[in-house]
Amino acid sequence: MKWREFEDECARRRDAGAPARFWWRDDDAGPVLPELKKLLRLSRSGSVPLSLAVVPEAAEPELFRLLHDGVMVLQHGTDHRNRAAPGEKKTEYPASEPDEAALARIADGLGRLRTFAGKRFLPVLAPPWNRVRHDLLKKLPAIGIGGLSGYGPRSAAQPEPGLRQVNTHVDIVAWQAGRRFVGEDEALALAARNLPNEEPLGWLTHHAAHDAAAWEFLERLLGLKSVLWLSAAEAFSYTPAAHG
Image 1: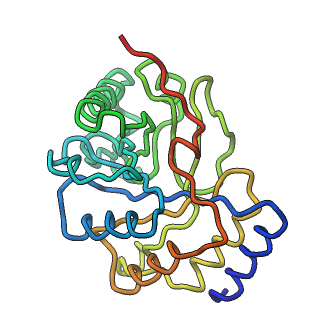
Image 2: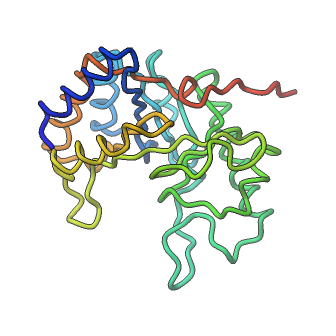
């Protein structure tokens, strides 16, 4: 699919009174890299809300001082360490780990982000590699997590009581093909296939892995005028619970 086709489809939806709803999640934030500063500039200059998935143990204090009003912080695991057993796909939460250990780590990361990000923090877990054991989900609300974000069409808006799920659908990095830009045609075609979904269309970026083509695509995407960009709070329709 080409830009003109995609823009025409977005304009058609807008003119019909049902504009395409987009949200933007960027993963692996922590160190204050030049690429992160560039990402924040693009969000600010385009007035596009950014949901920044931060690795709590990797986050530098300066990161939180750089955030502008359009940025919300999500929780990207705790340490982004691959604990998978041989033959298991990459995950911070392997099947062999006791629930209590995994939940304690998640709770620790949540506490760090709540302290440092303050009102910009939304207690949504975006697990590294978009993987978390299903048996942990029902226990997340009890430690303060109210949302979950993975990749691909969700199976349910509320996989467990007290837990809202809103996924991303288009990753602009081709991880299995040299960590390059996935390509305009592929990214736009994937987006078009997911436009009819009930959930907002989620764009997934990884600022530290972008090549020039990925940045060029992102700049053009953020310039679209016929779509509605949602903040994380709007996408999740999330109202934080009171904490003592």
